[in-house]
Image 1 (cartoon, helix red, strand yellow):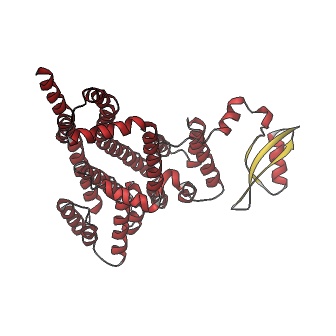
Image 2: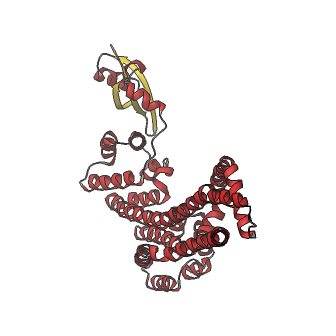
Length: 409
């Protein structure tokens, strides 16, 4: 006798799970049929003692995050499966066994079980909205209604691929300025705690009168040298406090809005974010999603709560009867060229194509600006280095010059 774990359906909708004892899987199926259950899955039950050490360790580890690359690969695989005519349930079951991410594999098994239980495709995927996103669910709903699931998965593969490229562009736009700021901060820290104290010893040995800038610089250097550990701790606490604040609803909104106001970089971030939105909006419209539903679905795809609020205000305006052009203009985040393309798309009934064209337009602009970002940052870096040199010249080198003259006499 062996213990089998089963999943069975009672009637049309209700799915139940459990265990029973039987000689073979066929005997277990017979028991279920006798009890009025329709067997869906029967397999040997695993016990905790039979689990491998790796399985037990995996259960103790936190679930691995599902990356964008994994969703892109999944969408491409599902397109190939549905295009070949493989049933959706069977395709999901096969993919769940080959997924390198255990969490994604388990999610696919849950979706497959929901589909076997009679739940619709959008509802089955919708139970994992945090993984797939609102846009993915909306397109699946349209694809299920039109019978074009393969096209939905291909569309999401293309969209997610472009979205990954846009996200990488945003990271590239912020990475270089951050490196510059960190390098300048390290340089100031080294000058304050290592270089200037060496000059301070020289000045103390000759007992000369020092100018006010030198006194200030030496006082700051002495404070930093004495309390450097506390300063580092304060900086660390400040970073933790900022991360906590920026994760709050109000803090994240203010920070997202502030980022867009940074000189040069903020404009690049704005256009890259808008490119993500208009591409997602165009994909949704092209797939047949209604305008208001599309706006609600793609609002969160921007990754910026300030832009998300502007998009949701557009949805409210359209629901009140305003035109798309008027609501887009009132949002005050689009350039005149983009607004003109929106007007053309609304008049010709080709808004989806215009949105995708706008996304390409923004992508080209962002790519050009990122390629030339170094030429934008270099003047800022030159000014910052110049200020440091000026401070050293006024506070340190001028007293050293006076000291040299005294020595020459």
